[in-house]
Length: 218
Picture (spheres, rainbow, N blue to C red):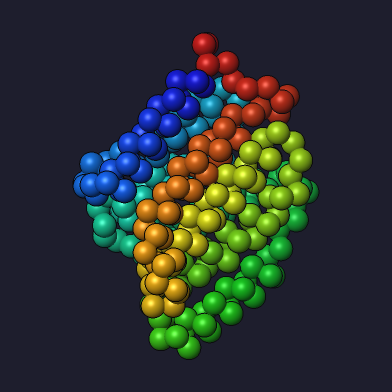
């Protein structure tokens, strides 16, 4: 566990420094390496009794970021994979809260977002998929606030940081809809939240039902 956190911290500080001082392809490589490290930790935790849904979600996250971050292509597929991540997290939350999912509000918000996209002349398959993804993400983050166990609290905080990242992603994608100062910091600002959010989600998946943490020495 300490080695994982130290490595993630080193990668985090390295790509943030590059983004602020000298943007380069190396920053993208470091970001993706940090995410792959999260995936490996989640898989290791699942193999020792941790949450398999978190491991599955991190696998989809890594695949989505391969398209959106590394290859910079096949955006619709990447967004749909991120939607799959939120479906996995919805299932995780429902397992913890007895099945309370708020499905109707999710799809009402999705419908309103589709109307807004159409009115703003921003409707495309990609933006429609992003609206579906966001409508699930928002309600997942809200419902996660009701989780009271140690893993649930880590998961909720991770989701909230992750959500803040995605809100800045939206700002960077549609700068004309937001104040110029906010648009100028969104590109770097999103990464302030993304990796810490993913690390917290991974840590939440390591908490096994008995309340312990998988033994890293085994």
